[in-house]
Length: 275
Picture 1: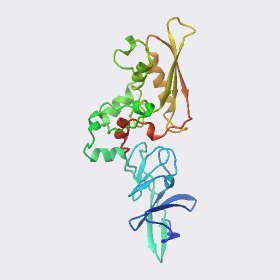
Picture 2: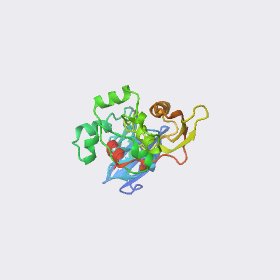
Picture 3: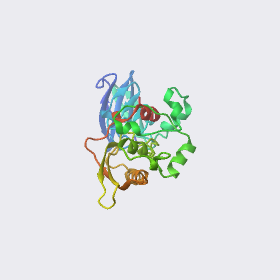
Picture 4: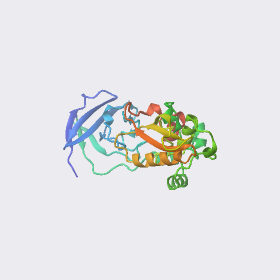
């Protein structure tokens, strides 16, 4: 086990307060809340964001990139989109200094565990069986609740097929958005519309088929290196391409402006535990 290392004077941090330290090559976020000191890795486990730059409220720090919250006492991931906790470290106060000892383990607690342990407290929790990403694309904030393991397995096992009867409805932008609500992020289990990933939909007459349309969809990702990107693109093409009036589907990835949590609908925010 590593030794304790003095990293700061106890008087250097305001209460509440936070600062970044480097210890044995690792970047560590040091916090002071209610007279106590805590240390966790300065890394959001969702996409590597710097936690020390986020908003500190009580014992929770929010990643400035996508809003995932972590418990500064344990490193546990409290809300989506983080699924895994970040490492916490031992802290002691001695001789007027703050001493930190690096740990090797990781917190295993996550948002699904918190949701399972707590009773539903929002009216939108009743919609847990029909989570969606529609709000994310619309730019409207939203709140969403957790899903059961059976729901998750069903969502990941079945490809999106579009709303019932959608293939016979007249093609429109509104219908495209409804079809895209069938496409769910494989990690968050929220549809890409409520997540705010859809920036726009355009139509153009198909060059190779009379009376059909070429559909172009501007889509973003929660982070540039999102591992779910290829699956989301493929599912989007399948969901829209099944309509009889669609000749081809083009998905254009747009990273400007970058995605932020305020693009989510209230339903999505509730489901992910972001308040």
